[in-house]
Image (spheres, rainbow, N blue to C red):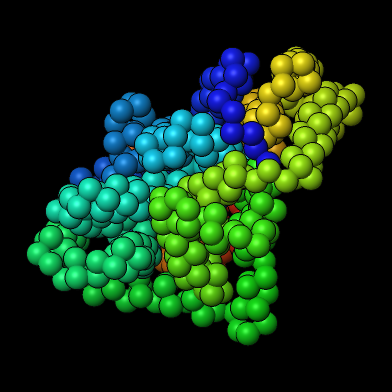
Length: 525
């Protein structure tokens, strides 16, 4: 399906060009649109650690937060310090950087065991995986960082295991498992356990799991995780941590009932194929009679297959599992796909891939027509210039494909890189102007300016947009605490909680989850 010939000059040029375009596109305008979805929560917890001068106790608007341990918040704190402000770019930087770093590690690992050509195709496929490319690489979320932390010990298990360096293997595995545990909780334990069992059972070296290096690794994990919770216990009771972490894991596995579970069994594999596109286009190469023989031919490929399959099963049978939960497994699905694609000599699949490349190029050549019917894109400055650049890039790509004999799959990867460029030029601008998060950011800034140097609280059990809260706290550089009694100052409250025996002024009104929220000021007597 993919030629095994070494990269020709034009293909090397295309790969380098795609890398440069992708790196630019991943970071271009990354910080111009407001935080939304789960981003403000991640940033808010980091801010409150800074403002409260306490790196051990995560809080959200001053309330104890148990759903995620604090490592990613520490990463955000480092980013805020490094970039010198509580900005959107700083909030998102390490998420994008983690994806780039994982792609690089995947390239280095694959090159060592499968050669340069396979490594190029594997790493580029991972870099442009559709779900990450067009969505999660635009967010300052935890998942790409967690994928990096979780994939490293999977690579390390094979790398050190083949050398018999068991001390390094177990110490690295449990070091990163501990970091993963303190990033996202219990999900790191199945990843580590399944990967180790897969490797040592396959190698028929199960006894290695009963030797001193393994117990030393477990000890390192216990010291790191136990050390964190010991420090936490110096400030708060740790009991709620375990209740929340276990409850979350159980809910994700069992929620929804039989019908939802059966639907998930069908949809989850299909979503996975979609989310790794363009590598998902290579799935047909697996439908051959001797597929197991081909996969077993190379030990690192078979290891990748076993790691992917046995870890994937955990999420396949968990009703609430999302595709982003298996980002750490993407390299170990893409490696076998690309490897088998190189082994496939069926002309039909080669023709199909060529047709797909032509279709991709042809469709993208029509993109500039959007300029004649801009609709919501009319807010984008220099839209026609952006679309013209896209057209030029697509025409250059078409020329390289038809005249320079660039492999079809590389052409499709290049189309994905151009897609990312177009998204990065257009989507951030529309998010700045046309989203509810943009309104929340403006409101947060207005309230922070209005209440500057004055007390500001949430009254009672009030809940409100975390985007608003993030920008208020980032501007005022203090936590928005809850208070149950009125004193002079500013308060967010519900209408039912308006003070009855005190003078107040209503300054603004907005809604959250369909319920009006008011900003009032209690005047001094």
